Length: 99
Image 1 (cartoon, rainbow, N blue to C red):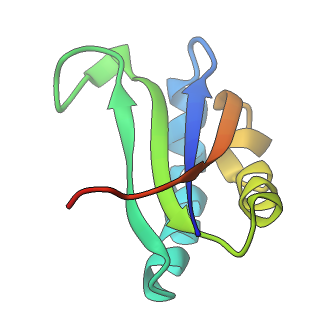
Image 2 (cartoon, rainbow, N blue to C red; image 1 turned 180 degrees about the horizontal axis):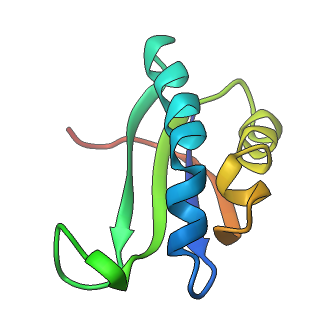
């Protein structure tokens, strides 16, 4: 089943985000190679594709996992959680209606 993982960034976490990004992206690439990643990306803190020093307010990941527990475990092990980029991450079942 698909699950949405919505991470909310801690205030002033841009420097932490940039430091943890390579490990975070590697995990996403692993899901992609397994054919389990539907989409992933950050939410800019301002209305811009390049928010610069404004940074990001969070991220969204939609991916396939065997269970809600597996999805939660994967989210909890994310470098953004472990390094303090995310102040929280919510994992919910997701049904792709479109496209």
